Structures are given as structure tokens and as C-alpha cells.
Length: 495
Image (cartoon, rainbow, N blue to C red; front, side, top):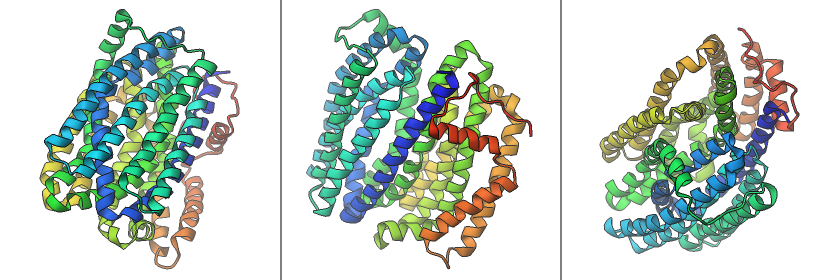
């Protein structure tokens, strides 16, 4: 199978899985948000934010290193994975103790402490399974991870939905995550042995461990920074706003879930292009920039209409999906569409920097973004609550995107004209769609307006030449896993 065919196949597997996952998760989140109202939703979101923040100290960049080094040295996959699992298991035990200690230091109520305890166990298991799936990615095999994504989501949503419908305690809701995590690690280990021939040796190889640890330092720093600015807002809302902290955390986390639900698109694409970029960096460096330009083009096709559509329809979507108690979430959602646009385009930038051995520079950029986020949240949350957290998030993602864009310019400068023209053509089509949605949103139900907007956007895309017939063929090829003859990235047409 050619490199391009493998890339298309992997992208299609994970994209389809993520689509299924996000549809189920979105419906599930609507159910539990309505069932537990802002205060309960805030407790649930806070427990997950705490565990997500501490989880970065279990990872410390090993997942990205295992993927990259496995892509470059597939014959060492078993050795790399074994050392990564040993490291994460040892770190997981220590971090779990720190996590529980933190809940006592900040004097969390007993319920929230129990939720963190359950979610923490799930986090340790997820970190182990992430290493396993990272090995599969390095071997350019994403089929089994895609299957797991769907099954794990079904387990969580099935048990969690039953809990929400019966108004069961929040412990049962979080317990559904733990059960899905148990399946995930079990399935990943079985598939590694049966389908990839990767055997785990629970023995420390100091030389290899040191090699991976040194390489992972910049990734670890970047992971810490990104995890902080992703979860700090929810934690500070709960901490800084007194008795209503959990309620405001719920009002913010609800629109934030919509934004995060859409990030499966760049995440799936990045999962496929990162090992490809790592390989091209060694074998064909000129292909790295072309792959970045093509990925950015496809992401612009999706993020422009998503951002504009969400901004215009926020006042319709929030009350219809979550109910009137979440009306204060409308403005935060509109502000977060700025973060959505920047976050989409950050994914290929991060893959580019990591694949080309510039994770140190990426860490510096993310560190500056974390500082902006922390300062912004401390200043804005006490005054503007959820709106302040949304502003800080939008400013953070915008800063990281702009600085990364400037820093990676020399990698994609050969495709500057293509990217600029693509930006304006797609942007014009999306703005035209947005105007149509704005004009009709008071007269048509959302269920009719969204597909009508999609048809209008598609027509305007062709009118403004934001997409060509060849692009449709490539996208269909990705979805259908049709093998291509060329081993190189499709050439960027002149504009």
C-alpha cells in the first residue's frame, strides 16, 4: 500500500469513528446536562477537569514520542511501548495519590472528592491505553483504535444515560467512564499482541528508557502547558466564585462541550498526518509543507462554516438543546467560536512542529499561551464569570495559532498563495452562508435551517472556487479508502 493510500485509509477509519463518538457524546451530554442541571453538571465537569489536569504528569510526552519513534523505527515498537507503559504505571500510582491529596487541600465536598477518586482511576487506565494506541499510530494502523473509540463511547453513554434517566447519583455517572476505560486498556493490549505482534516485556531497559525520557522532555512541557490552559478555566470558576462556583462551571462547560465535540475533525486528521510528517521529515522533506497546506485547506472548509453558523445560531441552539436554565451560556458559546476557529488550525501546526523536531519551540509558544490564559482567567472570571472564561480561552487559542503560523512560515511558504486564496475564497462562501442563516433563522426551524445552510455553503464554495472537483475526489477517496497510485502528497494547484 502506498503512503498516500495508507494516510487516506487511516484518516477515514479514525474520522468515521470520531464522528460516531461525537454524535453519541453530544446526545449523551445533552441528556446528562438536562438531568443534573448547572450545579450537578458543574460538579461533574470539575471532577473531570481535575483528573485531566493531573493526568498530564502521567503522560509527560511519552505518547507522542512513542508514536514518532515507532514510525521511524517500527522494529523497536515492542521495546518503546514496554518502557512507556512501565513509566506511566509508576507515575500513575504517585499522581493518583497527589490527586486525592489535592481534593483535601482545597477542601472539596465529599461528593466531589468521590467523583475525583473514580475519575482518577479511569484516567490512569486511559493513559496506559493511549500508549498502546500511540504504538498502533506509529505503525500506521488506526483500524483497531477506531473500533475501540466507538465501543468505549457506547459503554460510557449506555450506562451514563441509564444513570441520568433514573437520576442516579453522580458517582454512577462517573463510574460509566471507569468501566469504559477498563474495556479500552484490555482491548488495546489484546489487539497489540494479536494484530501487531507487539509483546509487552515488564522489564526496565535503562538505556531505551533514558532515550525516550530525554526526547519526551519538550513534549512533556508542551503537554503540561496545553492541559493547564484547557482545564484551568473550569477549576477557577468552581474555586473563585464561592457557593455558585459549580453552577458557573456548568454554565461554561456546557457550550465548551459543543466546541470540544467538533475538535474530533482536526484531531483525526492530525492523528494521520503526524506519523506521515515524521516519516517525510526523514525521507522527503519537501512533502511536509505540501501535507500541511493540504490539511489546512480541508480544515478551513469545515471550521469556517462551523464557527460562523454556531455564532449566529447560538441563541437558538442553547435553549433547544439544554433548556432555559442554560440561557447564560449563549454569549460564552459565541465567544468560544473564535477559539474553535483557532483550535482547528492549531492541530496541523502542532503536528508540523513535533514531526520536524521543534517540540521545544512549540513548548515555548504553548507556555506563553498558558500564561495568557491564567492571567486572563484570574482577572476576568471574578468580574464576568463564564463570559470571562470564554474570553480568556479565545485569546489563548488565537495567540497560539497566530504565533505558530508565523513561526512555521518557512515550512509552508512555497504554498503561501494557495493558502491565502483558499482562506479568502472559503471565507467568502462561509460569510455568504452566514448571512443567509441570519436572514432566515427567525422564520425556519433549526432542523431545516442547518441542512439548507449546508446546501447554500456548498453552492457558494463552487462559485468562489473554494473547492474543486479534484478536492471532492480526494475527500471521497479518504471516506471510501480508495487507494491512490501516487506515493506523494497530491500537488497543490496554482491559483
